[in-house]
Length: 161
Image (cartoon, rainbow, N blue to C red; front, top):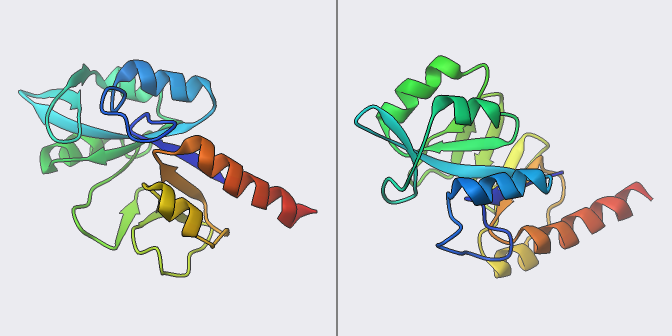
């Protein structure tokens, strides 16, 4: 089971960390994947959830491609990313219960659905983590990386015993 840091957060939401390239790299060095928000302005790529914050290059994305899950925030970003569909993992959604990620994964926002080993579950609050009881999924995306690691990695060890 993979743990994906939501926007570079490790121990709860932190507006100063979110989508900051420095903290994204910190998460990757610690062994975690990272979900990032990507925008396009004047044909330049930027990280940022609600607006453009940190300019990045396509090379920056490609160098970290094994560890990034890119949330395309605009149609124009999708148009750019589709050219790299073999090298980057990306998706786009607004209020969908389920979203297809290229590469064959399902980003599953409906936490009541029965999931499988192709599903990525976003557990963005501490209560969601504590109350989520399924274990057979590919990954969890969270602001609470350490809490998810304790809960789900511990359960993984118990299942193998």
